[in-house]
Length: 275
Ligand code: C2E
Ligand code: CA
Ligand code: CA
Ligand code: CA
Image (cartoon, rainbow, N blue to C red):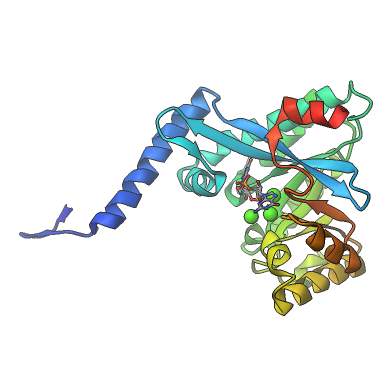
């Protein structure tokens, strides 16, 4: 409640109040988790048309001692809004580069790229390019192994600055995937301008492709678009053999989803991969 003039006016109804408190609770718990390095990095495989693992995506996991497990869909937006995404994003990139460095000692893993998700605020942050460069140099990585997954949202506000940054990172051997493609504001005009390596078909299209003709058409269109623009294309959220077969029939050659493996802690993922 806030006081205004003489009378007291309640701005928040109890339900709003509850969600705001949870946000604040999560924010302070997250701050603590960042300080104590309590976030965990999980990996999920990406496979080719033969089911062979060709890359992995790093996904954050967080279990708070009091609040329990909180999913990224809930804490990432709070991290974005509060600025905590900067230290979190730094940790994620360091973690990815360290993992890739370790993989350079393992024949089976040394050519496997690792993708990390980058939030708009993190990408816009002034020190971002220098930070990625620092991590890459420190880990002595060959080119093309660190992949950044960005979303359409970060492309809209300042396309020229974005392209410049992407090119700088591209020169350092970083590859870019456009995540959740088809759900945002992507204009086809700027797709060509971007130094992209890959489009990721959003999982909502994959999920409904077999029952909704619109989603099938969109999926097909994205695959064709990628082909024409010389981008690689990967479908995410593949859960069933039926979806896989259909995506293959549409010309898709890379896949990610529970059908091939759920996200798992790095060490566990590596063991499973080597076996
Ligand atoms: P995303 O980047 O689109 O990641 C894909 C999400 O789909 C992940 O959820 C993954 O666990 C889930 N997934 C994978 N395969 C399947 C499947 O077959 N079926 C279904 N239903 N889901 C599947 P997760 O890990 O909960 O992450 C949610 C979102 O949180 C991510 O969406 C990403 O936007 C964000 N996120 C996660 N980790 C990071 C991070 O390190 N940094 C940033 N900035 N964002 C992150
Ligand atoms: Ca992603
Ligand atoms: Ca995605
Ligand atoms: Ca998503």
